[in-house]
Image 1 (cartoon, rainbow, N blue to C red):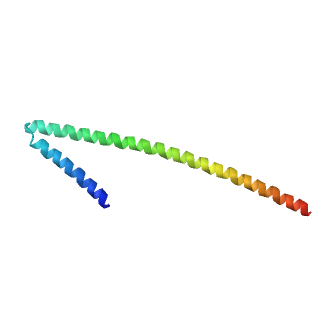
Image 2 (spheres, rainbow, N blue to C red):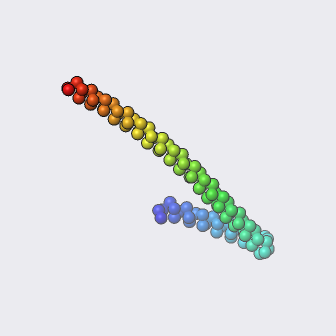
Image 3 (tube, rainbow, N blue to C red):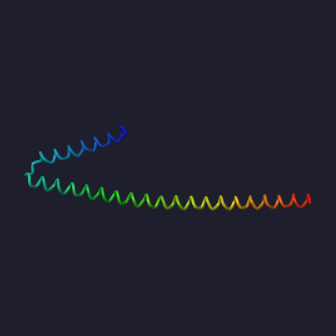
Length: 100
């Protein structure tokens, strides 16, 4: 894990700790505060799951586009190679026929 990843994890941890402490010292009673924390944690988990699933869909779409582009380029290269091979074959036959 590099320094940037460690910093990001530490920052997120500090942020969540600050939020939790702020909620705990809020003027609500313990039961209401715990319920609020639980609801916020569930919302955060749901949002993280939604973001993760959306990212997977986007990555899958991008992978498909890259695959299609790669296959198109491979086919273009094959066509050009076949054209060059045909041209060389014709020239070789011409040379052989002229020398015969």
